[in-house]
Image 1: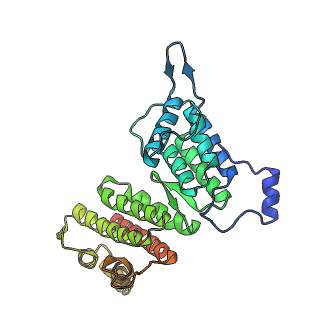
Image 2: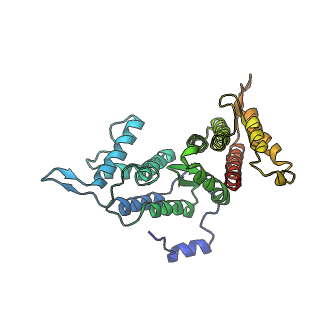
Image 3: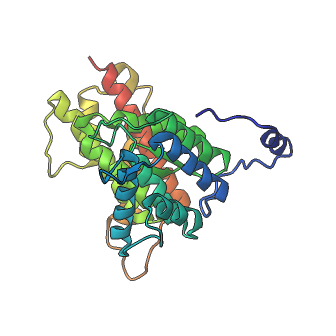
Length: 309
C-alpha cells in the first residue's frame, strides 16, 4: 500500500520532528497499528461459516501465530477473547516488552514471505507480500525505529546507508542454496546483535565469513581442509587461486592483511577464547563494526567470485 505524505507528516518534517537517529527501545503505538493495517491488507478479513464449521485462511494464520507465540512464551493464551486475531492484535498493541512486539511482527511477516513459505495458497489480499514487507520497512524508518525485515528475520539496523549498500546485498548473495550455512550463521549473528549477545554475534560473524570462503572453494573445486582450515588459510587459498586477480593484488597490498586481521582478530581477542579471571564484555559499537565488516567482506567475495572466469 502506498505511503502518503499527508499534511501533518509534512509539517512534522518541516519542524524536524521526524527522527533522524534510530532507536530500539520502544515501538510506537502508531507503528503497531500500522502493522495491523498491513495484516488486514495482506490476509483479508476473517471469515467463519458456522453452518459448515469451516474458516478461511486468514483465520488459520492468526490461529497459527497465536499458538506459536503461546508455546514459546509458555502460556495458554495471549488474551481473553475467543478470536485469535483480537488476542494477537491486542497483545501486540498493549505489551510493554519491545522484543515481544518484534516477535509478533516477525512471525506474522514470515507467514507472508515467499522466501520462507512453502505454502503457495493465495490470500484475499490487496497487496503483494513484497509490497507488504516494503511498507513495514518504510514504517520502521518513518518512526525512527532501527529494525528491518530481511530474509525471514527482523534485524537491527544502525546505518541505513551501510544496510542498503552492504548488509542487504550480502544477504541477497547468501540466499543462494550453496551458501546455506553462511546465510544461517550471518542471520544468527544479527539475531544475537539484536538481543545484545555481542560475544555470540562476533563468533557467528567469523563462522559466516569462513563458511562463505569454504562454499566458494567447494564451488571452484579448490582443495581445503573442511575441519582444520580457518580464516587465515582460507584467505590464502583464495589469493593463491586468484579470486582477487593477480594484476589487482599489488593495488590491494593491504587487503589480505585487512581480511586476515580485521574480522578474525577482533573475534579471537574478544570472544573466541577463554576470558580468564576477569569477565570481558564486547561493546555494542564493536559488534556493529564486525557485522558491517562481515557484510562488506562477504560482498567483496561475492563480486570477486562473479568476475572470476
